[in-house]
Length: 240
Image (cartoon, rainbow, N blue to C red; front, side, top):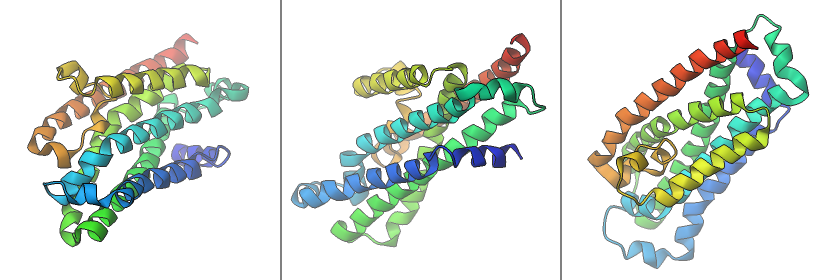
């Protein structure tokens, strides 16, 4: 019931078509990149997918994070605009349920964008490298990996947005975290490697078995952020 209610709210925001448009724009990045300079890609050594991911995924990961940050800010802005959140507190509706529904919807929209991007990379591998169905299994593994990397950021950004009545404050926090991850991603430090906003910029295709060490970190961070939301949201309602 809460999930369907949150889905109806989205119709007024245009967030869903906006996320789809963003996913299509991101999916166009690798296609345009290799179409502009195919000889550069074809001259590189390595598997076709590793070449494509090494040249494109840092940008795609950053775009996914940016879409997710904007989506989380909009999802809670519609609650605070016009005092809707205060009215919701007067109704017999679980605030934790609302948070879970918003997180699930945001995660689903982000997944749709990631799927479009991976399909674009498969098209590039098929068109320029003559790679066929053998690339589908690695891309499915990459899809699961990327969703695991995005989950902690999805929960964290929704938690931040739930605390910020002003959309621009939540957006500013998210952009600062994204900028921090972008400028420190090349540093070889555990804090940087396991920073939630750095995780989606990793790709399993590039890192191979070494990238699997990020999976436990992503799961632990997701549990911690979800636990923080489960404690803080009911507590805030009692103290309000």
